[in-house]
Length: 265
Image (cartoon, rainbow, N blue to C red; front, side):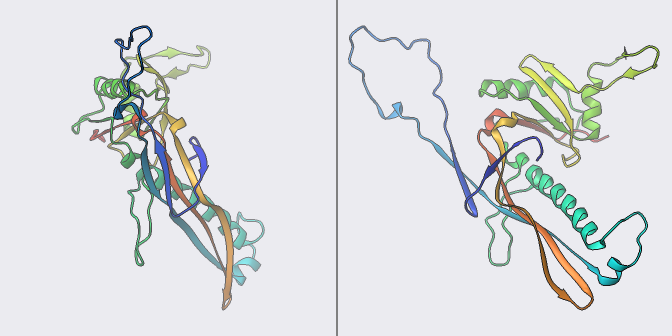
């Protein structure tokens, strides 16, 4: 969520459009002075994409006694401390939803959910077939993205897949500082035939998947930015919650890709 752009949603159903350029043609040549001929295929139709906003909430409560007593390691109000914790937890939930959630329109007894990044990417996909992530398979997906017109700049993966990517250049030993006796074995940037990409460890990525993104085409669209509300007191308790309503806007999913079915150990 911190790396992609931010936008604004104006309704529970958030819509945007995409367009596709016609294929290039080296035979585009006309006779001098010829009259232009028109056909229905000359107009490029836009595609409308729909996403639903998802409400995320973290409630919390504290007793008046908790606020009054001394607390080890916490200065000030326990209520304010819990508010801070729940705000951080909500941000993590938002990040997890933007990656993993599947879309649902909702009903009177069912919450709306957004369409996460891994579900949204449908054009450029590959499978490792339960084997460790292979550099050849990785580059095949990169080539497919390039063929579609994409220029990805970031790779998101979990711990084991990050180690696998770093092992592609093994045996590896680069002495950065001989006096400090440092050995660098991690690969944080992958310079491929189809562009340079930064490799990011992402805890919310499934262990069996890797995402390859052109980040400029992804946005978090806020219908309601994160806010705090204190509600009516009950007995000897203060109660409140933090909440936000968001969806994921993907302007060109064909500029990104994903690989599924990677080994996890």
